[in-house]
Amino acid sequence: MRQWGMFFRQFVKHPGMIGSVIPSTQALVDAMLDEVDWDRTRLFVEYGPGVGTFTQDILRRMHPDARLIAIDLNLDFVAYLEAELVDPRLRVVHGSAADVRRFIKEAGFSEADYILSGIPFSTLPDGVGPAICAETAAALRPGGAFLVYQYSAYVRRLLAPIFAQIAERTVWRNIPPCRIFRALRAEALAEAA
Ligand SMILES: C[S@@+](CC[C@H](N)C(=O)[O-])C[C@H]1O[C@@H](n2cnc3c(N)ncnc32)[C@H](O)[C@@H]1O
Image (cartoon, rainbow, N blue to C red; front, side):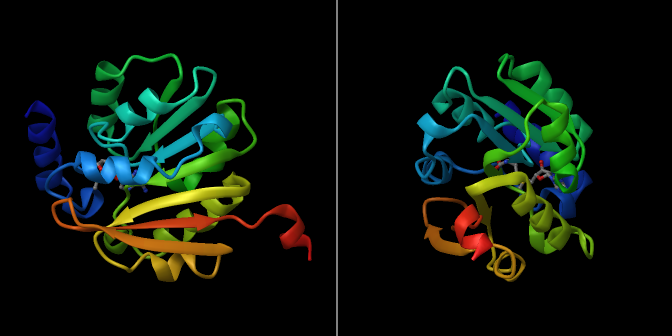
């Protein structure tokens, strides 16, 4: 309940940035994270962790040698996560997902295996959504995946020009039901062809 209270207060303060009144359900978290090849993942990036609804489960599933960078624009969420989730594999960053490549470099990596986003693309200021999608594609390794959950199909038009392959489905056991997208960065050989 403390998490929900914290989340709701932030929604009242910044509705466009948060985009939802309550955190995601466990059914949505499982649907997204079941798609990940955890054995092959060494760097996972999360955009918009909020109160850590996904973050905790990512850490639970992640390899002991893997790293997680969680990026949030909201300083209150960043402070909350730093206090609540103590794990040497986690780096919580205050900033925008649009700067993901800088944050990856600062953490000592060159590219990510997976990037998962909880950002409300349809309510972001003009130009921010396309910039985040372009930066994300550049930050992923060839064959890496961008996993996105959204309450509308709006984000598809941002993903389509950039990613090689996009799969979409609906998770009904969420409030409200949610669309999830898996967008793949092209493999190097296909890119060169
Ligand atoms: C709908 S909440 C998702 C919270 C949590 N992941 C969940 O599923 O319950 C959206 C989150 O995106 C963050 N956010 C919005 N714009 C952002 C940006 N440009 N970069 C990073 N985080 C952003 C908000 O601060 C908020 O934490």
